[in-house]
Image (tube, rainbow, N blue to C red; front, side, top):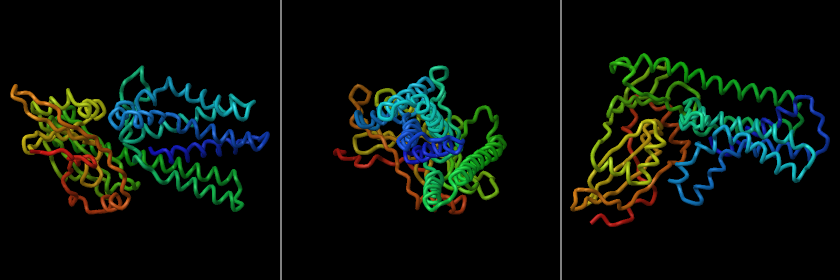
Length: 356
């Protein structure tokens, strides 16, 4: 989930608290309480520091892992409460409590996306992925803007907050029901491939909360089956890809930073290989996330065969494709079965070195 959405939900935590018959002692305390909730709602993404220090690959190793784990929930809340209390003292535990609720909303919404998070580390290293919410959910930001405008123009504070809270919760529950419905259909659908226990499958939510356009991927051994759902929630296969297994792919997974990071992050890793001049190009992608005709969470590793029958790493790159609302709209509402075969794109600016 993006940081603007997390902040909007943090403001929602503060507003809901204010509807509980609380008598604010002063305007600075009210502002400080809001800031504490927002700080808590943003705190788990402190791992963004790895992006600035080391670039996208170290960031991928860390993002939504230990930084989102439950031992740090309490640390973030205490740290946020302490910081706010330094400026507006006397209400440390209030600030800490609201910051803690903000942290829970952050981790909870991240767990509902396809990327998921290691929320219960060190008890469990499982990355919990709900496949319920899209990575960007404008509805929460829209509700924040509507609430702010209504209250500014004289709408009753409590009723406005309660109604918007109900809409936000109802939207999330609707998304959850879609996931349960389509998940039940997928469990029946994968039986056509044989023993369901031998198949792995995942759903990818669309930007819009409708059945049509939700995507799925089924992995059986090295074979990946990509498809989408129609308006009635029925699965339709659209394309198939086979993952490569070769010495070059194994070398890329073991000896490149991109390969190690994607192997660690992705629950369903797709590998493709091609020749480009003297080089061997290995493309890797998380098959569980698909935007229109792209597998956006991907990387490329260029290798040069050596005289010893091994490979030398030439260059590597990691890609995280930004969200394109226009293309997502077209992808969601285009007829099922007419989507292009998924491709593994190259990072921006890649291919700067000579291929000769």
